[in-house]
Image (cartoon, rainbow, N blue to C red):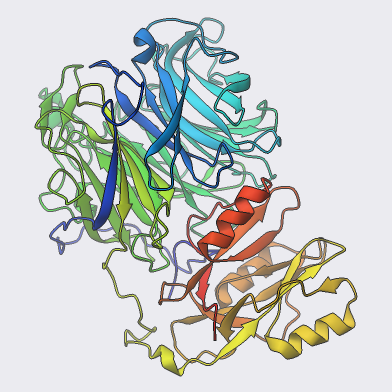
Length: 611
């Protein structure tokens, strides 16, 4: 079995999407609860009718260090039309404890007061970019005109203080020096270490530049530019595209979906004609059906391969209509816990008519597309105003789904939650949806499709040893292996009072995958892989790695079989990985040591904490 999203996951074969008959009834996403952020629930926010609060939303991490994740939501016409960003410090139940406001009046913001800059067109958390122990953010201002570069749009990198105030700001403009003045550079933002140099980079959308661009800006820790590249419809292996498709209106990370060590992305093109013909648009109808593209990237930001989502590929009853604006927002996550990444796509023009600002503003829908290992959509669920704990029925042009982001497991039930923007109702609103695990797909089956009897599995303690010289960890195979290492190498210590977790040393069930221990002869660190193909690919690609063991380190499940998720954290200073025991352990390490990042979006594998 192949797994799409994992710790260095591997696809041995990749097939293009094909049109299939609809097999889904587009059931509702199961939502446990919701919180709604608007004038009535946010003290002192005072939104005006056309402020468009909720046009962009972002998970910015735990900014104030209280152990609870914080969010950012923008309002592009707030601050008297200039735009502003609200940083919401949360309580553990998702209610808002305090709000910090960033606009043209904020100290060190670097934003000059001018109407219609659209500051807040996009927001993204940057982690701790400058290494001061405090999270930073980037904000797009897609309509701000730069006379020097003759481009429309800027991106502001804000180095923050814990209270949401700004310590320092750096700005980025388009590398297209004489491009169209309607570029809308900064219409979308995503951030990850795309070139694997230990520093966060930016993927920046410019939806108005011709048919749309995505720029890859490789950064230094001070926010300056190290290198750049661009993705367009004319790029090798790029998107198919259509005239004025607004490619780059949304961007989100997928993690490393093909096991090459590089973070891959999804890009939305909400004005794409999708599976309609050009002449339908030529007759004056809306050309805004929309499309989404998955890009597998190379280390330099170029495209290795692309997979496209159009109306017929999506398992949506009735497909998409012109004006739906499918792809204006994108996100990802493993919502059915099958070890394969799922796609989240906003379609805010759904079920609506022409809005007050000229766009087709509808009530809106958010789709979750469940994928198989060949990138096909196997089923689709949705969130709208008919979904229990979904969108509120405001009977208006809500534009629900115009922004969406995966905020991780806020309520601790083992499933990621979603923050969704709805800019159109009055001053705008945002929803925090606490999701339940989806029942789509089989969760506890082996490779033959039969239910695996997990009671037959014999579990062995896996110990975590600490190397006092290098600062790295090694995971052993049982007590004998632990004692052998401790007796042979004086650098290793056993500092835990119990096993890290329990796993099987034999493949009792076919759905248990071998986890191999590879040794890096340059750094002295170990990497744990998922499966035979993954092991061979890393050994062939990276000459520093050696396989010195006689067999797998242990066997583990790549899907949620009722055990505990083991997360892989990346240390940006040392370039090595640490594997944690469940969500609480993961969150504790991320809070205490800012050099650690969680870039995968899903567990590495699942194991038991008790025998």
